[in-house]
Amino acid sequence: MATAATNTSTRSAPAAPPARTPRPPGPSRPPRPRGRSRGGFLRTLWSSTIGKKTVMAVSGLVMLGYLVAHMLGNLKVFFGPDEMNGYAHWLRTIGGPVLHHEWFLWIVRVVLLAAVVLHGVSAYQLSRRGIAARPVKYRRRRTDYATRTMRWGGVIIALFVVWHLLDLTTGTVNPRGQAGHPYENIVAGFGTWYACVIYIVAMLAVGLHIRHGFWAAAQTLGVTRPGAARLLKATADVLAAVLTAGFLAVPIGVMTGVVN
Amino acid sequence: MSVPATDDTAHGRTGRGMRLTLRIWRQPDAGSPGGMHTYEVEDISPDMSFLEMLDTLNEALILRGEEPVAFDHDCREGICGACGMVINGQAHGPERTTTCQLHMRHFADGDTIDIEPWRAAAFPVVRDLVVDRSAFDRVIGAGGYITVPTGSAPEAHATPVPKPDADAAFTHAECIGCGACVAACPNGSAMLFTSAKVNHLNVLPQGAPERETRVLDMVDRMDEEGFGGCTLTGACATACPKGIPMPSIAAMNREYLRAARRTGNRS
Image 1: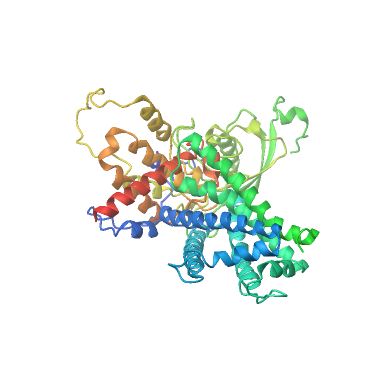
Image 2: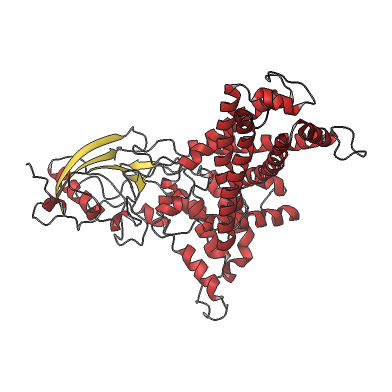
């Protein structure tokens, strides 16, 4: 039991120091009142580490669902400019005539923005907390690949999203940047070497992020049956591989001249 | 005093034993700065436990009039959870056991071994390799019990417990609270410890009346103590000398979300 920790005997050293090492006054906090005064479900979640991980899991799954649709839509580029541009136009008409032109797209954007903000804020707060919980580093640190790539990978992906929006949504940094002509913008954008490098690095980061993140989300949401856990781990690997390959197909297609 | 480092001495089959260089964290008290100090030890038998090797060092230090290295230990048979130090960056060293049950045969003659205390904000160093783990006691105090009238023990068969539940409870009850999970976690998280304690009681009928308050209060306390959050790296379950399994954390997450939903809807 943990109480055994108070038995700080120094049997190996009978001479000095005194048989009981003096204990510093530990952090003494008043005991919690018995009658719990909790807020609602969401408030409870946001106030705990497990809850913040839950927020990250749910917002991550929302973004993952979007990525699957986005990747599949991207593949339209291999069927020529008419099909790609027609698909892009159709996206703006979803929900009509009930929804106005582009409203569906804006709803998706607002949901995604909320997911990105919640995911990022939770990740930042939990990271700060994790770093503060280990104030003195080990001399020989076992490097932890998964966590490091999650945090830095997340930052890389966030920076990429900003660049990606300026490239193919607003067209600001795109060499062509003509609204309504995504096919031509894609071909022009991936005509530059730096665009391809940025894109490929980011997509590899996305793959690693999904590989750990999807499985971690399942654990956070409480998947405990061994069979289900194995299946979800395999699903995470497949999702990561398929999404990375699907997204990379577009710049590789442009670079090899399949898409022109 | 030079001892030739031969294969024979590496396996301790001669009278001289192993010769090791130890780099040990020395810190006089919580308020003073600490640092790594280098010591040489000789005549180490591969059959010694790691703690016996440190005893040998301390005897030499005492004879030289120096302060011996303080470290926690009690039963020295791997069941109490008192001992624990980070050896070459691994909690309890290279074998999956407690430091007292780690034997010197897992090291080679001439090795340099780094020995550090558990590093966590919630486990302040008391002296040298001794850390204050009373944060764990406070997590237990927040809900790691069942509220029953004490007195004569109840009839064992009064409350039937299905065999799988009893097995699950026992798996989690194996936790000895040594703190290796916190020491190994890159975030200094106590999720594996807390999940072992929560699941141990929450799967049993005796723990059912306090099922929700237990997990909510213990997780609250865990967060208040300054442990980090879980990033599911699995370093804790790899370091755990008692083999508390990684899915224990997912099981506590499930309990937590269930409890938060229920109490959230009530309030």
